[in-house]
Length: 90
Image (cartoon, rainbow, N blue to C red; front, side):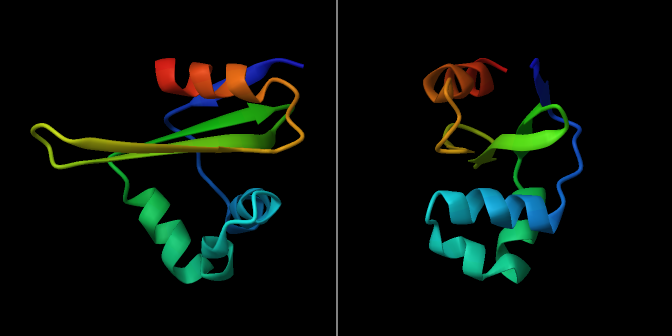
């Protein structure tokens, strides 16, 4: 199973909500706000294994100095720390 990272990926609402629910994030209950927020991020990176979304990261910046990044990954992902490192490096 090869990890595929992309900055050009199209995210589907259902797969993002599933990922967020797996992490217990309350924003999963507000897809009408979550999906546009992710799509409007300055950067959005997805991680997939065999086409399945296993992680997502986004960055929001003021364009000059400050960048806020967050990463989500499936809790059962055996290489979660490695996944975060790859998303950060990407």
